[in-house]
Image (cartoon, rainbow, N blue to C red; front, side, top):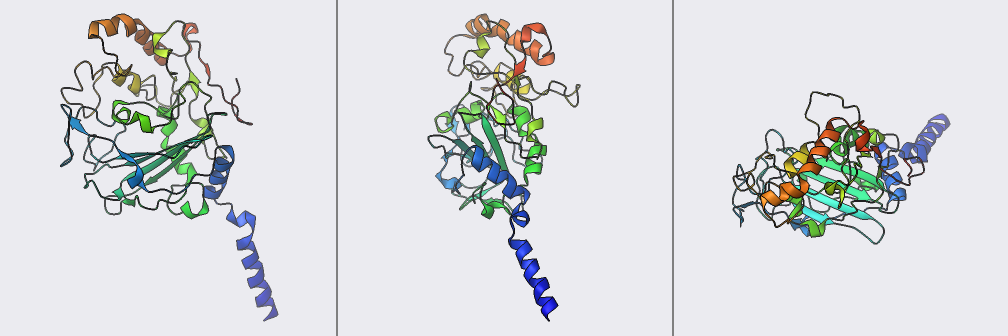
Length: 327
């Protein structure tokens, strides 16, 4: 009996020990809380709805096949396409931390539904560049509840948020290669609810889960008009598949922002001015756009294809993490 009691006592002590509590979620959450800030739980209903429109008229009774400003992140097979209403964006930023939440609808639901297909959180320290990523995905049969979403950095979120290695493998930073918060026509409709720091330091809190493998290089060709308001990343300097279309701010996003049709784009989205979303609200003719930005876009495309060219002036994005890139 004494031996059994001792065994049980030791087992309970092991479960209560810090080492046993060091789950991947706990390790990453603690690292992000220390580098940026603890992130509170939230309710997706407190976010602002991202509109879906056709010819400027908001659509709320269905998910149309095409729309004026489709979501650029692929909603995947089994979804209702790129024009699903009632995704929401919530800003949880403080005076020292920038935190953006996307509660994403990939299937059509009512405006008051608390069910979502995916919930994403980006947390960023604008002083150091430290950035963390959290993601939760539901299924058609079991969507996520957007009510009382647990803290991504707290222990209560362990069963809700995907393991950090899973998030790292998803490669969000392959597209967010220049900035944590990327502009698109879809998100741009509620851009006032998204924190921004387009030229500030940027690096990923890794904590041993693979986030440091995401690309964080920028191109700096001289006198390039496109770089006046934001950076443009280079994506992976050595892409895993050179034959594949390059994602990121210098690849698909640059093309979609400068005239190439995005999936789900309707006739208005394929026509000027909506077809040329950068810079936002340009206000002049298509001819003027090409006169001012055409040559700069050509240089960006060339540097995206081969960032090693001397004219591209490729360099690591500055950051101030203890174990990350430095100026």
